[in-house]
Image 1 (tube, rainbow, N blue to C red):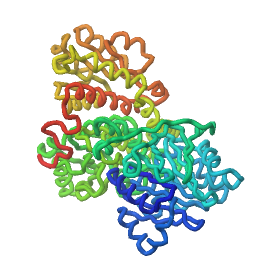
Image 2: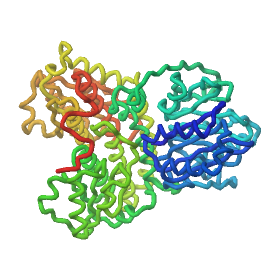
Image 3: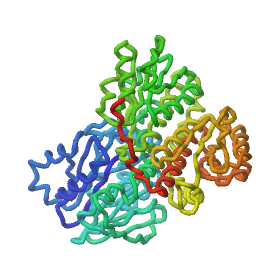
Image 4: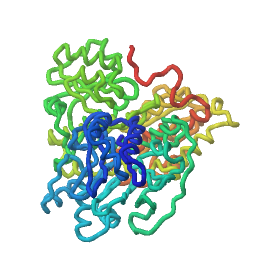
Length: 629
């Protein structure tokens, strides 16, 4: 995930920015850069690769550049545009320079308008477009602050940006519009900006976490925060942080897993940016790479994976077959490699591995390639082994995931499969242009709906916590229930499997995931008052039948936790506990509801594990990357 660092004050800006960016390296990145204001002009130093490359660019001018006391820096994980020096931040457009995290949803519309007015972007990024908007606004006589406000009114999307202009020396303007942004006053005079608190702590332990819709204007003498829409001054309390390095890495969350659950909207945005061709005008246009040709040639797909990645593959099968009308089989890699599978001509084998190092999945891919069968990989780790054992790789952009239990990497894998399904639907002409456009618009909106649901005071979050607390008897989580059933149909079935796996992984509870239609084929014998049934019943084509299964569970005396639409009075009245999805989910295509169900089952397991006192981030007997059979 990209990192932002900014400073205006009396210190040497290059030292502040480089030190801060080094503390953001844990987030993962593949290019970096710094912009300094010196002698009435900007000096940009940026490079693909590691931060050390940027440092080397300073060496020949270090004595001159260290006099700069104002600047911004960035570490970028390539999403929109390749990891090149040209696409690295900061971006300069005329007298404006900026760094940006997040996504501009309506970038195509903005790009068309800018091109029609004679502007010519130098990079492949959507970030640079914001600089042109600010440039135009200031050209009409507005101040930097007013220009940033006016420009933000023209864009849609969750993002944060820090901007400077040569026309207003010593002024730094930052906006938080979804993606995190933190500011802190320099005890020596001045202001720091950063995408999280960690790089600020060597300079100040009193930081301000900007709220969504805050705009901060800083000079070496002052810090002012205003509302982005109204321009009125707002007051934000500072927080005094006494964190260890590990706590800093967790960004204030008690566990990495919880932090990573909350990072899922950003992981979706970055993964989407990395997959699609943002210069194209058709929905679900994949960025050009070798994997695109493999998909075009495929007549059948075989998806192989293990654990959580297998659940992602099961979910992807629904979209690929329903939308693209292409045959798809899903196999556990550990079984596939030993059953002498029959592979027909035109089959593409797709190996899915979060780490890119999963032993069984890699073994399948090596075997398939030895038979001259084309192979595609999906992974979150660049330069991992999967890149050597496949013909091409689609990389997700979830950023580093520390918790052993996969959360944000799962959703990133699921999104990758959905985008591939959309791409093949367009290639095969199995969905109309109108259907594809509508789906793609919903995909763009999805991270924002999820972010609303994950707000700490949302109804969804409150009900998750209340549910887990009430399932605990006499404060003893271990004896409250003897087991859990997660049930769902259609798109919800793989999420039921994933929910049960998460509970086993981190809370050590007995849990089963079932297709709800299989209830009467054995599992119903297990249900009694000591069992909890988590029934995933969103508004989709399977809701009515899932509701019938819910009633069967209720009749056997099991405790029922229902998950579905907030206004579903019919089903919610049948449940002991009802967890509502975000209200805005009603506007999304039902095929996208798994992206909202997944965080619910993740959080149910997380809360249960916390109550039981297990090691959430490092569960017993498990490893982050399964590199042996």
